[in-house]
Image (cartoon, rainbow, N blue to C red; front, side, top):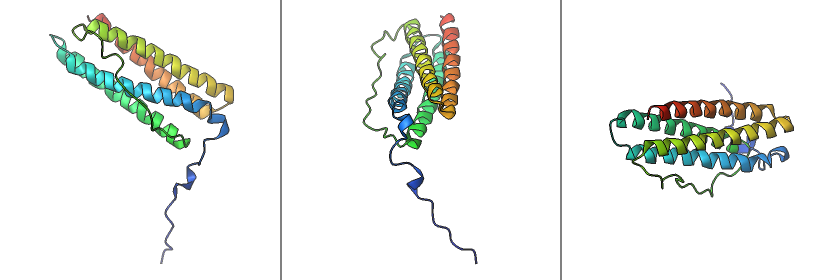
Length: 161
């Protein structure tokens, strides 16, 4: 008879974040909120697209929303792993006041947001490098690459209009 194993408990998750991550957690939370904000904006703007490029733009907004969701989930997992609480955040679409009849305005707003995200992830990577946290640095550099790719996609999309 095989002995029955005890189920793993949640005790493997630390009760408090390690001291070297205390300064990183606020940055991770801001990035998490910004990714959720991006998700809301992409979904919101996708509903307002009109005209001859509607199908292509709607598809592009949906793809970008999925990628923002993936990024937010990745950040949420990192925060949870580090025993950081991720509730008590407020996410509201910040760019919804834009003129929805102009895809150029929406895409320009997205381009500036993507640029800010690259800078935030690069700062996270720099802070991780200074602390010698190779895992966090690799995570942040991967996100820098993905956000930079989003910048290129946004730039290409803006050229079509």
